[in-house]
Image 1 (cartoon, rainbow, N blue to C red):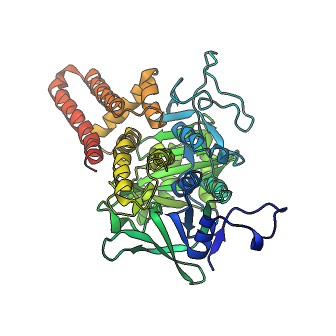
Image 2: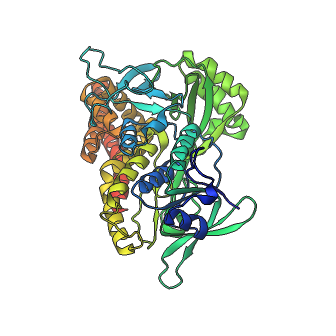
Image 3: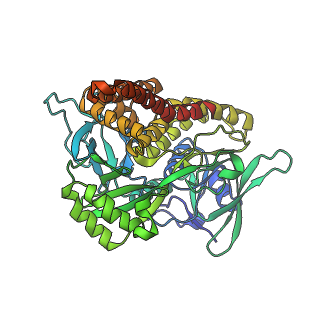
Length: 511
């Protein structure tokens, strides 16, 4: 039998055998049917299950393993994600995790540092722009003493957060959480409508679960993606992760981006004592070749010396410990949903480079949007495939106000931060100098990154402001006698900026 977890009765309740279950519960338990079948009890799948259950939908939530996940990404939730979590009534899932408040970023460029705090008065209500009222913490206010509060993110161990979300799902009487591996979809032979899924337990028992709507949210390594969408993920680098113990970060409660000769390195706390180090290693990196000691040799001889002195000892200890894990950094533009009876969501449908930590923010905001678009008032019957498809078309275009910004920003920033040619290096310097200007040169970009500012034109404006600043720096530093060559190089810098951002803009418009 598959492991089935429903909301449990209180100790004083009568034995389950004599409980009067609701018709929906009986339907899930006895006939394995529900309004919605969700594949994947991760960030999106679990939060969507809770949201639909609270709209009185009957939900079967399937997950191949209910053990605590152990991943090196999905550990930093931007302020826009915290706000979305609150809207879903799931913000208490951030409690009891030893979660760390995140106030912004620290960018370190060849040893020079600049703080990029989340912007003041940036969206949300007073409770969203806070530090107080959460685990007994005091609010973080502007250094000038104005008392105005900045929005904050949270960083944590990914697995602990997932288990909190699953615990919330198990409390909902409209959800059955089942541990079983989904092996395929069940389709109508004539209409090709998806009717449900086939599963197999660890013991080898095969089952079939039916739903009016099937949601496939089985993550970045989705086994169903090829079956339903034409796009394939593109991965040109990997993140190699270490867990540092008692690291002395230059600016605690901030995410750190370390820039130098190689690809970027991310540092951020995930617990009181634990800090995550993520090192981007592009394909074909010579210093990571087998002849040079592989990835471990690259981390020791190239990355370690480039880190702030205060972090090097803890990084070296983690390296000596030998526990290095990796994850591909993938790009997958979003797709419209055309298959009747099924929708593909989360990383199975849309991914961006995790450099900016936007994945969970996108997922939770997608759930907020689906809560409205698929509400019982707008879609009384989820078996009405025509109406569901109409709402999903709206979902696809409405979500772009946020997701296109985060998707494009992640890819464009990575291109600059992993600069590997003179034009990109010039843009990288221009980006750092732009941040040093402060004011709107910081508030705008970090507001986009935080999922707070949801206007694609703002991204376009700041990106090309960086490009023009990079061009000005090149012209100003060049001697007069090299002016013809300098002007030619500025054309190359502007062209490179266009080559970086426009393909991602077009992919958002085309998808």
